[in-house]
Length: 75
Image (cartoon, rainbow, N blue to C red; front, side, top):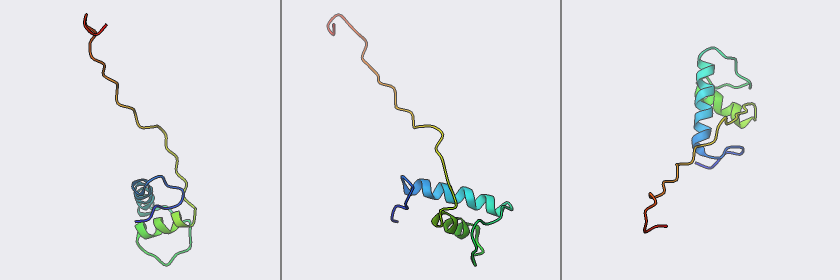
C-alpha cells in the first residue's frame, strides 16, 4: 500500500478512515457525492477528496532513561 498524501503512516490512514466510517454508519452524511454504499469506501473517497482533516493531540512518550546506581567505583 502506497503512503497517502498528508499521512505519516498507512496505519494512521486506516485509523482515520475507520473512525469516519463509524461516523457514517452512525448516521453522519457523506461529504462527497458517491455511488458507493459501504461506509468504509465512502470514508476512503472523502479522504482522497481532501474533505477529512485529522490532528494528533499528543506525541508518543519517550521511554525513561535508566541509569545504573552510582557506586564508589562509578564516580
